[in-house]
Amino acid sequence: MFIDSAEITVRAGRGGNGVATFRREKFVPKGGPNGGDGGDGGDVVFIASTHIATLMDFRYQHEYAAENGQNGAAGNKTGRNGKAIEIKVPVGTIVRDAGTGDVVADFVEDGQAVVIARHGDGGRGNSHFATSTNQAPRFAEKGRPGEERHVSLELKLLADIGLVGFPNAGKSTLISRISAARPKIADYPFTTLVPNLGIVRVDEGESFVVADIPGLIEGASEGKGLGLQFLRHVERSGVLCFLIDGLSEDPVKDYETLTAELQRYNPEMLGKRRLVCITKMDALPAERMDELRGLRFDGIAPMMISSVSGFGIDELVPRMSRELKAWREEG
Image (tube, rainbow, N blue to C red; front, side, top):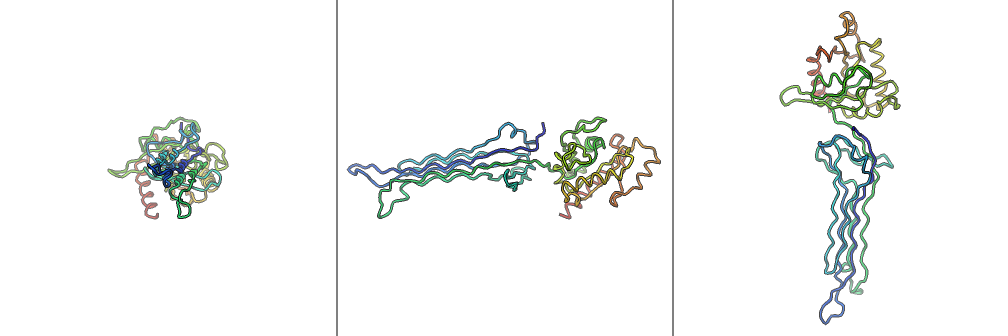
């Protein structure tokens, strides 16, 4: 099951208490203070991992706590520090404060580690408080509580190119054609219910990642269909590839509806580089193909493809690669 959002509570460890003790020596009824310090509590650390693909684990466990520090002991012995708890999240996860919505961390690299909740310090023992006027203090500090935070987790896939289109426009067929990804494919809307990632190999040592998300419908930015749930997964993409169904009565209107939904969801998405592909060329007569070639989509000449027959795919993959390189050079 693909889960891309969750809310959890994390609690760092409390510091151990310092203690008030005194030396016991022969012929000395009460020696000087020798109370040890409490150990520090453990931190809550999030670590990004490419070995995890979803946030599913967080749907079943909602609270995570690090270990508390141990109390100090006589003889100026410091208590043991509490162990940190390490929580692994998928690369692409954004952690926000659930109350304010502020971003706490954005995990974009494998192995990236961020302390989400800091430990409480251990209290000081009474040996720290001896003075010339109070050589036998009978008090010590208590350990401080660790941070507790309620955070929301949101996964945004890290893909170079995002495929955007209406349901049944051919996104899943395309990604299965140009990569090793094998999404479910059928001739009816909303076959794709979860995002899919595919690695497209261009040359030896050169590849890029394509994301196929469930098809958009008009009103997707307001939560209709499956759009709002998955639009976040193409927010990080450098290039958007619009797939327009060649069997549509009005391909230009379809494109305008898609761009309008992206605009409402996040205006910055229309600042990305774009490709437009008209699909299902295998099902169209030659005269209709000529009509479609003459169309322009915000000034962009469309590429004509058929993922079923392979028509136009040999030109599409290098074009994707060039657009991606141009985006990287701009950044």
